[in-house]
Length: 253
Length: 307
Image (cartoon, rainbow over all chains, first blue to last red; front, side):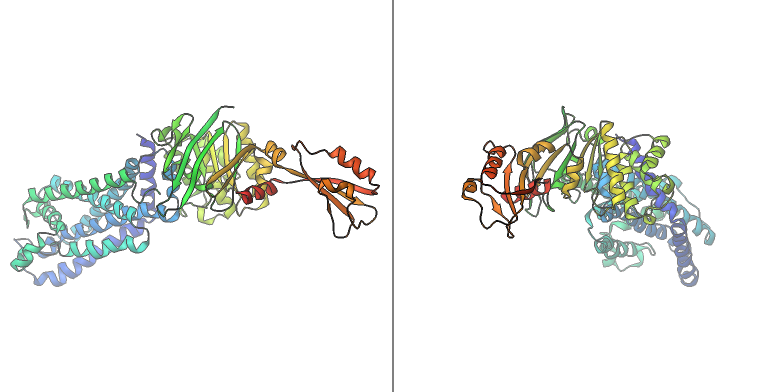
């Protein structure tokens, strides 16, 4: 195992984050603050409590998940796509580094960035609402698993994409709609029965629901099922990556 | 000299169906400088890329110091440094950062003293904290060399190292290459500048259309395939070559002032003394004579044409 390589890939990726620190922090802080002003205060004041939780508070887990999902995918996909785009991938391929070591370096860094981001969002949210976390360990567990799973997913997208359009298309056309329609900003009980059933096919629902349960002990689906779905998504991503590494798909000519 | 890189029956066909390498067999000797010569698209970069692990071979095998490049990739890649053809560098990294990254990637612990000396040797030390994007093309080339040498490789691949490089850097580059050779590093460079191969290499391999046409000691190559031309300047213009010289296939220049005879040095049938005797007997008045030796370029062009 080339631990030194994992370390340098990880820190090199983290360095990119620190170099754009203002952008990395300011962007989520500003967007979170805007969501709170618009949904939490302006519109939220006219929305009744959901399962005993004020709307401003209710959207905190969904808002966090929205950023974590999109940023995990964006960071991990860009991280591996950029060397492919500039050609610097030659160095990774010609170094005594296995694909899995490369993966740990890139995905580890992307997941770390998402965790930092989630912390910033939660701290910002706590300035607007009184945030009490009912099950901090479950909250952390869901968060870490989500960060890792979606960073893995982002890594797959980054390997698959051979242009900037492909890099953007899945986050834009699939992930963002799934997050918005996955109960990030509402409880699915507010939907007509048919759409409640349709929403059950949306994997993001389980992430948001489980995450929200760890805060307020309210959820759209059982917390066990949520955990199972996160683990299932993680396993699918790992299996897909194992297949890519085994076949060399899009990695080597 | 024992071989350090051994290539056996190596072929590569890309997914597009393009056959980039056809059954290559080559032993690269420890400590030598081997120049791979060939036109664009000949397969030089594919060959290097396979040895370094960037491209997968379709069939055949490659070993580096007895280790297979696929099953023992950690051992083989740790021994190899690669300077790619393109100036591929992370634009926002600093020189120091990127060189340290390369060393770490190869599993080596941080060694600032070694890297500082390396940057000094490559005249890069004063640019240590500069961002790559602020460097000139020549400086970027040096950074790529520094990255390739950051882990003390035993085998160094230089893919078209002097493409688009000014004279000064080219000279520096050959100085560096010679210093590395004196330290026992095996160097394989690809080029389509024949004069480079002629100047620096111990052996020359010629690749065209994915085939390795030959690998020879540079001097042997020039001796065995090199043609020489005896050019004789006459005092008086000649209308026709004397019939006594017919068997020599002598060419007469348009102005009738020069006759020339092309011969292959190693050819048994070549007998310059007989020819000179015949010329003397034919009462031609000689003003001057010179022998022109064909360059590697001529040899290369002949070889590629032949195939």
